[in-house]
Length: 226
Image (cartoon, rainbow, N blue to C red; front, side, top):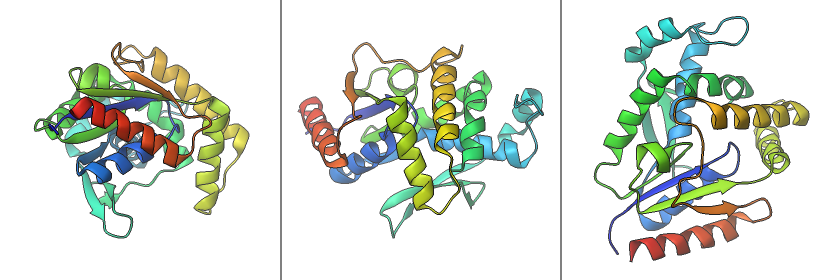
C-alpha cells in the first residue's frame, strides 16, 4: 500500500484523538494531536496571565511570547501513545484549559504558527493528524479525510466520564455548556473555521463503540491507500 496523509477533523470530545491514535498505531504511521498543540498554547497563556478578566486574550502579549512556546511529543512507553509537552513539561487536559482554548485557537497568528509546524511534520506523509482544520487548511490534498461528529449530549457525557475516571471534579451541565460554546466558536471563527471538507467522509459515532469506529476507519484507510 502507498504511504498517505490522513486528516481527521470534527467537533470537540467526539473521539477523534482515540480513533487517530489507534489507527496510527495499527498501520505504523506517525500521530499528531493538533488539539493538544492549541491546548498547550492556551496553558501557556493561562500560566503567564495572558487572559483578561472577561476571558478575552491579551493578543499583543501572546503574539510577542509565541517564540518562547515549545511544543513537543514524546512516546509514553506505558500507554504506547504520545504525550504532549509544553516547554518540557507535560501539558495536562483540564476544564480550565478547555474553557479557554477556543478564543486562543481563533487567533490568526496562533493558527499560522501551528499550521506551519503541522505541515512540516507531515511533509513525508505516513501521518495521521486530527484537529479542526486538517482536511481544509493543513492538508487540503490529503488522500483520506474524515469528519467526525456526535451529539453534544453524548460528547459531554464522554468528557464527564473521562474527568471522573481521572479523579477530577466534573459537572455535566457545565461541560455540556462548554461543548456547545466551543462548537459555536469553532464553527464561526473568521480564521480556519471548523467545517467538513467537500471530499471528506463523515462518521457520526454517537452510538458506535470504539471497536466499531476502529473497524470503520481501518476500512477507509485501506480503500484510500490501495
